[in-house]
Length: 578
Image (cartoon, rainbow, N blue to C red):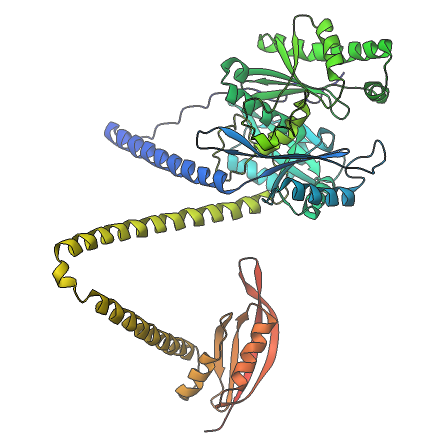
């Protein structure tokens, strides 16, 4: 059987050493290397610090939408750097036809998700979700060796995927994620991981999430979410052997595949089951039918394991099993009989996770393996700077169509928070020094501070007086700035400018003032809303030197404030003849 997932990932080749510069002295080389290392160390430290802030500041809830069920999970790190299960909730979706899918009842799932969030008391709005493997296209394509800039140009023009990936539909109908996983300088080629899903499917899932009151920031594929959970549990256990080689079997009604994690790179093999087999898994108690299913199933599992062992010369002794079948233990016994030298054990995605007492009952079941996807999503705590210590050779998949703009917003937020904390820290340090000096002076020169209360009172009065003058100064400066934009052969009475300046609301900005030299002034600018423009006109009409103020023109301004679009305006003011 042709296997589209076979050998999905390959080990990266070592990169070539950089070519030394011509005519560069040995001393200059050492100096250049020193500053390069210093710059790299500083940049790495800054990225590490900013990344930690991003992970701590951006909480994410893992949301798994499954047929008949919604699973929610949220984790965090405590002071001992131990993962803690903060929230966990499984919500049954009742009243659906048997065999129905999530996308067949989006409104129902949106309403049930909102209810589940209320019951679980989850407050964050950032959600990580996963789409089924059947809704994704996962391929590894070989392309000519290119630099990152050349690869970006090829992708921007759509020429790369049109030549390498034969899709039945238009490429514009898909959300695409890619990553270079291997560069072969000898063969002048490179391998690229291509993951795509139809925008219609992604939009359907994000609409459900949005209706439930969440904002999807990560869209993963279920097999990679399972990998995230396995990677995390391996790291918690500290097993070097399992971290380098772990085999996982997804066995259930919806998806079936073998995933071998070798040196943290997954090699995925799809396992085919017939529609009759799904019925056997859920309903049949016929021993002969069950044994026939196991034989067909295990033939494919054996082939996937043997192909790996032959290619990499590594022995697979155990397979971690993830399954949503209630009678999975019966099948595992049959699996062990078919592969006597290989162990089959249910994977526990909560192994090593600290579980609070109030959540113990929620997860107290014999088969916790079917929580693997939602736990893998919960571990995808958002990190826009690359500080995610569980990322290995493969970056975390994110099929969110607008992920670049979303990440840019998160970067800006983290930089802003980081800068704010830095300024606060500096100001706090200055104040600490000043207070220390003041305390020392008070203790040593107590007699000279007898009039301290009077000085404080006078300081407050002076501060109020200063603020008053600063306010007046601001009005004068604003009037002077406005006067610079007026082009006329006459001098406009300063009182008119002062009255115009005093009429400007806080959310209005002028860009131009034209005076015709007689009795007409044209004001041009932008405002946040129509109400702000009307407020300006209303204020102008109350001024003694303005007999009439009317809106001449209004449009959408080219300027914007964040996500707020500004309104452009032009107001005609007729002056009182003085």
